Image (cartoon, rainbow, N blue to C red; front, side, top):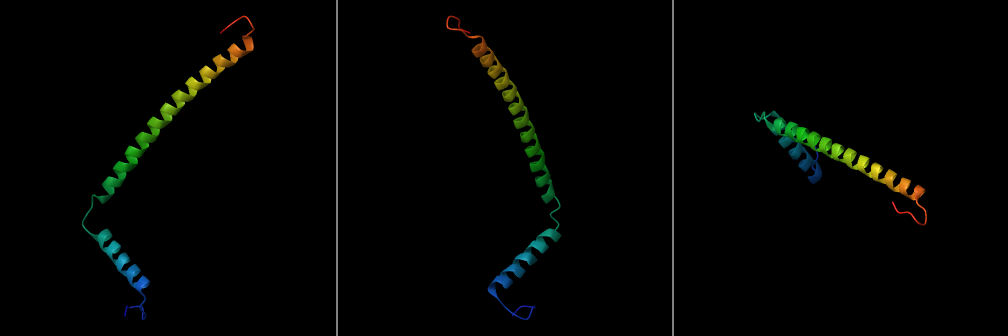
Amino acid sequence: MSKLGFSHPAVDFLVTFLQGRLERARSDDKDRGVSAVEWVIISAVVVAIVGVVAFIINNALKSGATKVGNCIKGASASKTC
């Protein structure tokens, strides 16, 4: 029987799980957060690179679409672009 006065497998599991998490949080492993910070920095760099590539592709597509639009507007039966 647990300290709560009743016992249920789900409650026992939850209490055991939370005790383990609490012990790990209080342990001397101080560099656990460093890994999380590294992942945040790596993710930020990847997002920035994707943003720059998307901007470049977007500008190239706009330029190409404008050229095609101008070609269609100025096209006649005898001319080609």
